[in-house]
Image 1 (cartoon, helix red, strand yellow):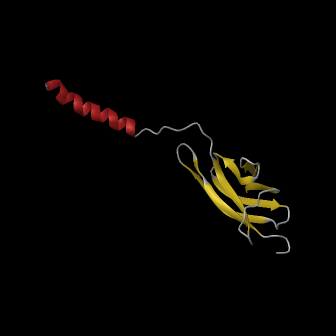
Image 2: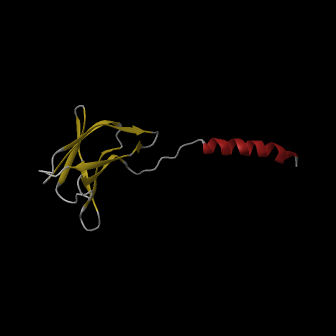
Image 3: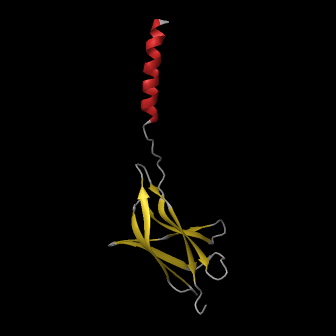
Length: 125
């Protein structure tokens, strides 16, 4: 019984040390995720969208993320890169769209993704 009295505090100390360690995953996260909608109808813009992220001299083309049918679901960029970005989009039949000061932060393991909705105004609308 005497050895159990000393083992329990030691076990609690070891357990507490393990809980404070951070275990990072191997996944890569996009820092910026953009959903694109028609500003008039609020319907998703599913084709013909291109975009880029800018921070100083850094430029990243937004990757197109599609649904199972091949329609654009969203655009994403800044893989595991924190920063303050300007997003620029162009789409067939729509006016160019820009958003500035999009802040992506990071913790010890990954960036914290930011979701942005781009409401594109139709040309002539």
